[in-house]
Length: 75
Image (cartoon, rainbow, N blue to C red; front, side, top):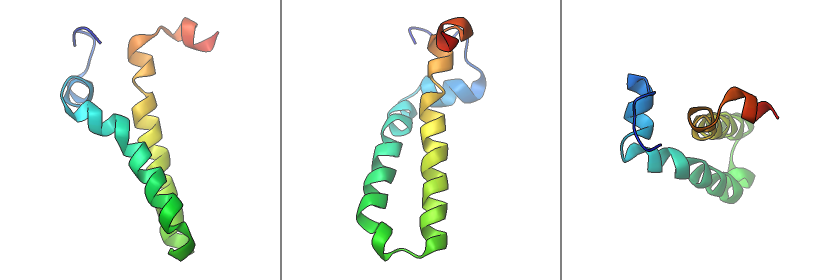
């Protein structure tokens, strides 16, 4: 994003600051954590960690909607 003109205050806080790098790499950290620890975790802890991972992936992929139009995404 060259400028933050189209961002809300929440979007600017995440994608217009160095926090964007945390949003980008957090799913990688979560998947590494899950891959090393899933065998020793309880079922509820593994499920909670998976839902956190799913939320992080959704947050990191939300930047697609900031860069591309809806028509180009749905092609």
